[in-house]
Amino acid sequence: MSTFPLPEISLDGRVVIMTGGDRGLGLSMATAMAERGARLVIASVDAEGCARAAEELNQIAGAGQALAVPTDILDLNQCRNTVQRAVKEFGRCDVLYNNARRLMRGPGLPPQGNSLPFYETDPDIYRQTIEVNVIGTFFMARAAVEHFREASSGKIINVSTSRRNFSGARNSPYGVTKAAVESETLIWARDMDGTGITVNAILPGGSADADPNRPKDPNKPLLPVDIMDPLAVWLTSERSDAANGCRFVGKLWNPELDPDAAAEGAREEPVFIEQQAPATN
Image 1 (spheres, rainbow, N blue to C red):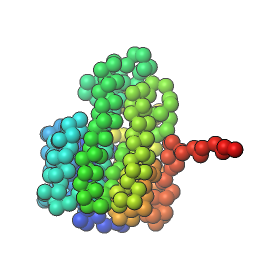
Image 2 (cartoon, rainbow, N blue to C red; image 1 turned 90 degrees about the horizontal axis):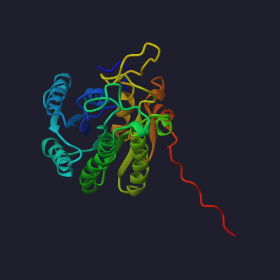
Image 3 (cartoon, helix red, strand yellow; image 1 turned 90 degrees about the vertical axis):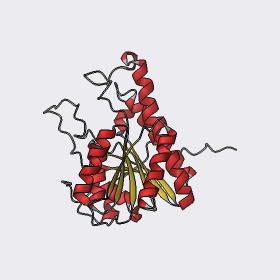
Image 4 (spheres, rainbow, N blue to C red; image 1 turned 45 degrees about the vertical axis):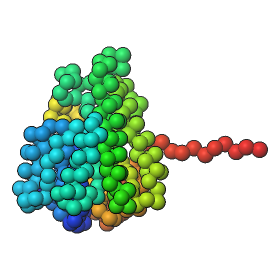
């Protein structure tokens, strides 16, 4: 159950794919959406984690509300299979959350994490992080859009990060990949203008307590894992249909406001803003 009050928005009938939905921020958002009536496809490279998360969601929201589909987002055919399974099992697919990503800590990374000067980062880890976070996000979005274009509707929501990670020391390769995801979000949103398909970004707004490998620092409080849940419910709903190419920050959501006003208050200017061409004589 979410510790933040969720907006009174029904998601009955909505079908959502959550990549990396077996843990952390992804599982928290999936749980919030299931509580509001959405059906979830949990996609992760961890087959056991997928099954465990789907079982947990079915216990919370009722049998048949969640489906586990092990997915390697670096395999386009597996991404397509995930979308096809959603449509086969639930009759439709409405929303893709591109939440799967390689973090700064975790399996295959240095014990202290991968927050290193770029010249100390293992080249293989750098390459793998770029592949998962940038190419994997593209593959999953490509697979979803193939279905969304047939349906003339659909939503892609990419999980991003705080601005400081794009330029602060020791944030390469993770910050590099999330800058790329910001660019993907804006470019894809323009590509989808007028099609009924939208592309937006969501982020916590700070370090969230979602990574079991993160050492606990009493001097650095973390945002709760469900910080993005209210926004995720709003973004999944039809109330967000007009939002395209936007960036939404979880910690800026004000539960005292009407959901639409709260979402507007949580909207931040995109990182990359189009510059007007200089005037010519």
